[in-house]
Image (cartoon, rainbow, N blue to C red):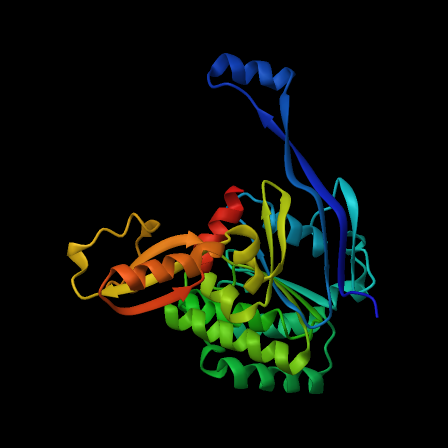
Length: 325
């Protein structure tokens, strides 16, 4: 069985105009404009199987959104190839457009001044969804997202969390097999983020849809994805299991100790002392993974330990190291 998404040497380079400030430079650029090449995506390769939920991570400007736009057909690459569900995305074949969706947390797909219900009906017409299929899909989405109380309100009157629920539902009315989600929880409060995550998890479970997700909220990634792809400066930095990331990118552990008299002891001689805002009762020491046993033995022998734990570093810190690798 062929992969749902297959990307080979995918690249995108922009020609960006540039000039110095001032009237004279503006006049000169009118006759002869200078351009700078910006390599947004460089020789990216990855494969995603049916039903996978994959986190696509990177700092701002890394090339995440550009890649999603190429895979959804909005942009044509300058090099390489991509195959999604057997289609070349930028050929924009109707069969492909009916099989995928792109939801961008910072872009509206719903008409601002009319009720969400009217935008849903417009999508039904665009995708030519039969009435019985539309009603069945809407019923299922309403069950998962509690849409009905929102349908009659103009979109401009919805809260951000309510609007995002409607945006996501509108993108799923045609039952796509592939979901490209670009920051679907951006700006939402903790409750809203949790509800969107729970919905995506359940939707994937029910339909077997393949999901490629970008997010700056690590809770989205850890809750939904077993695999992550990290991109930085347009280049692939990591592709693999989220649980294996620490071993490959940051091969160290955190030893947390609770002491009878914490202020009386200097822990810096055992390793790098780091802060952990979530657990102020313990003091944490960062050590290389291969030194954990030795350092732990020294701590237990030297200090009045009340409690000791060994853990992987926070995934946020590991990914930050991957960005800077």
